[in-house]
Amino acid sequence: MILTILITILIILIIGVTIFVRRVNKVTPEQPPVEIADDCCGSHAVCERDSLLSQTDQIIYFDDEELDQLQGIPSEDYTETQITMLENVFYTLREQDVAGWIRSIQLRNIDLPEDIRDQALLIVAERREHTLEEWNKNNSK
Image (cartoon, rainbow, N blue to C red; front, top):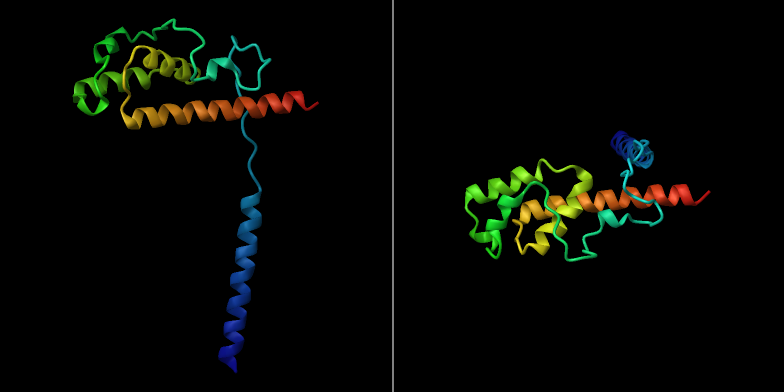
């Protein structure tokens, strides 16, 4: 009899904790305001600056002319030195320049290693999401 009561109390406790944790997780902290680039016109839901599609064939360099030596080489064949060159450029980019840099790399026929490409695409996706949220917030008034 006492064992049944203890098991019932334990089950009720587990259910209570589960409900409490779910309610706490539903509360999301406020996110800091999103900075919109000065050169973004604000008339598009997603800034063209954050687009990975090139509007022109014009190559824009990000102080990374040395990467041109990687043209046409598959990323699996890069040496450690070549990967370090790519990382040095990537990790010094401003967040708002990542999409443009990816476009530049594509136009220059440079293959990005998978880990750098994944990180770059994550940054672009996050910027796009934040910009879209900000645009929706400003245009829903």
